Amino acid sequence: MKKRKKISFLTAIQASIITGSLFTQNDLGSCAAACAFGFLLSFFPVIMLSFTILVEVAHASKDVILQLVSEASPFKTAVDLSGILDSISGAKKIGIMELILGAWAFWMARNLFLYVTKGISKIFHTVSKSQKILNRILGFAIEVIIILGATLLILISISARTILRAMKPSIFASAPLLQKLTEILPTVFSSSTLTILKSAPFLFLFALILFVYRFFSGTKPAWKICLISAFLCTSSFLATAFALNLFLDINRYSIIYGVLGNLVILLFEVRIFFTLFFAFGEFIFVHQYFDKLLIAELYLLPGYDEKNIFSSIRRMLFIRPDALAYDKSKVHHFNKGETIFDAGGFSEKVFYISRGSVIEQAENRIEYHERGSFFGEIPCILNCQRKTSVIANSDCDVLEIDSEIFKSLSSLNSAFSAKVLSSLSSDFNKLYGRAETFLI
Image (cartoon, rainbow, N blue to C red; front, side, top):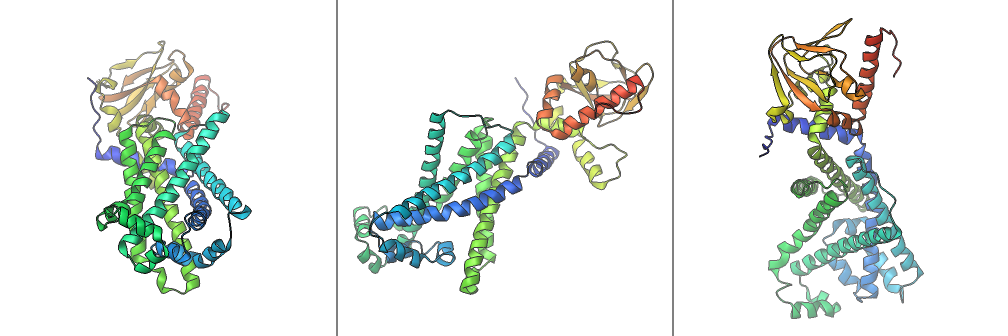
């Protein structure tokens, strides 16, 4: 029976640091900004298109629509809804401009999906393969359904909440359809459903995030970690939005500053959401490949001679790999003077010193390796015989790492690949007595 991993406090800190480091390396902040602007350029056209459908198809009056969106502050102050609705109402039928508006709205929404997909690809290192025409059509259909579903859900939620909060006779006089609905479905339009309607957009957001994490990543992460990450992303965004609305009151400014302020705050909130979205997506990736990413961090540990304070802190935080040492079959104890391996044999393992120190001996040189160092990686990478012997310089604990795992790290960390090349160059220089590097 496989022993279950124990997550220590140090492991949690290591995972957080790796997540933040990868977030920066993948430039996910820029992806979040692109998605925020893409959302702003696609969301308002979709909403305007929905208003057109309400006016032309549902025959809703201007007053009804203004009342229905009275709770949506970005619409009240950021755009002139009254003028837009007058223009829509003046049209006799859906014409070329409405069709262009619809095509543009969906095109911008599709660009938003492309921005999100690019960010996810950066996180999970997945390369988008060329798809068949049928798969492209199916993917586009799914995107259209999600866009329409999200817009419809937002409109229904805002409308229903407004109806439940203020059932004014004047509204129902101009909207007989709403009056009939409340008469036919009194339980649906009761105050008891207000909580559900308030939660509906956030539940949809949670489900959409969960769907993207699970199926867009291409690495099939576990449902459990996707659920946790989607919940944390949604709740963190709600807490941030609540704090912004609590401390920022745009209504006290003039109409011009109110309009600009609402647009800026809306853009800022969307930017925060996509930042959280990509950050928790990176967390899923780190959770999936934490052991490999931790080995790469160990290999890149700064030495004791580093005087930089940040390098010293990083070494202190990563030098103890609790997540790797849980498997006792991979940890070997050697007494002082005991031989770890001799020259001449083939190696399928790389070794990390978690405690103590060792001596590596060759024909013309001797090297000391202390805690936090690797040895035996060069023969593994080159698939050749060992040219050195390693003896324990003190009582030590050595962590064993499979060569296949070690070799696969180059695809996850570019800095790891650079250091491996540097180690190869240095090893050849020592072996052949060269003074200059010739590999890098």
